[in-house]
View 1 (cartoon, rainbow, N blue to C red):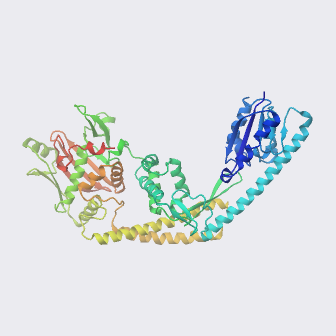
View 2: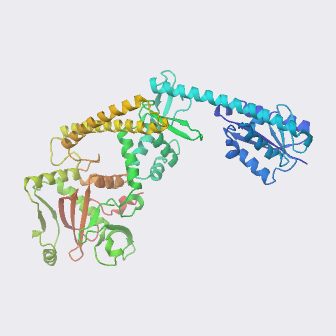
Length: 586
């Protein structure tokens, strides 16, 4: 007994909300009544075209063809369709070849619109069958060609209207973060969705796409994926742009141009550039070091051994009592088997960072930085032996800086960046500094926008296949001149503002502790050190149980501190009984 398999296809989302499926399935009862064959399965291809053979290449119909090849749909079974054009709208030779391949396997094709059955089992009707399927395939292909040309023409007109006067043409399907307002004929920002997009770009400055989407998805309306982020960066719609494309001869999408100011901006060009730049730098990373769970290691890529100059590696190990602690050890100690014996707990490095913040808050003269250590007589003697450049006095270790004007100026600038991006502890003129910082940010945003426009024109040139319109050449020339002028302005403002490169503000040691409480804060601290060119060097002396720290910025030493911490609860002076209580909250 033969079986029948109904195949239903529609190619657009508009048809899905209409009667396309009902229209194609309602005649199935009549087919069964006429032939006596039951329809055992209805296979639906949703939103798949047969014009280019998509249904046979990647749609549900591909599985139908596979089942015919494997004999699951057998000789004598029926493939029931509304019309031949449900199976194919390809050019005649391709369409007829596809239909013949089905018929030659003994599967009959039944069309409900005209109650006609096409079969390979009746050789006397071969010519009639060939003529009929050829004529129907030809008509279907021509209809699709006409529709395609009309759609292309309408699409091109709509894109031209959008580029010239901002006319909206995709009101029914705006991207995430926007909705269409029919009264004003404009797109408006959906704030709760836009806040997710802003958060993603903020997170991308300090973490990878997977971690960023994981964190945003904790409270988001949609479930973000890496693909969502990649498409958002490619089409640049959060910048207010509409990406215009066309299909080439191979039916591949080819970029034409970005239509600017089509949507309202969700993020600034600077934020977009910073996120993309950070992603690229992580991709091309040449640093040596480990990624830590929870990003505990805020010194990642910025810490060196003061004894041999090699990288300090971060790892977690159990002490003699079985308690897990994070440690730093010199690269040569582990990899080269003991050439350098430097190894100390992470808590001590973090404590020295907090001590540095205390020092910069203090009123110690600009040429001197100091740190207090508690020493017994034997330890004082030991420190005198290992630190000849230092002198001991009442439990203090002093390190004197050269105080010639140039050197002092460099140290002031360096420490200002380390402690506060607006020179908070060396300058009282914060208002003018903040105003200047605002000017610099605005000028940098303008420059980023000009460069983005120029890059968009460069990218669109490929789409014109060598025939570059004169208006593009003219606009690129004007942009080059504008970019040069803006670079001069940005350089001038940068020189006046100082060399701050990040918006993180660290004024007190409490600021550091507060940021260290969250993974995002720890990532921001590490990003701040790297962006600011900050490098730390540590030397630990086991006998005296003291640690020395040198801080430099862009190769210029700005701070030197020495201190001894208690063996138990080393950070108690900073109100931290146990550092792990902060980073183990994750």
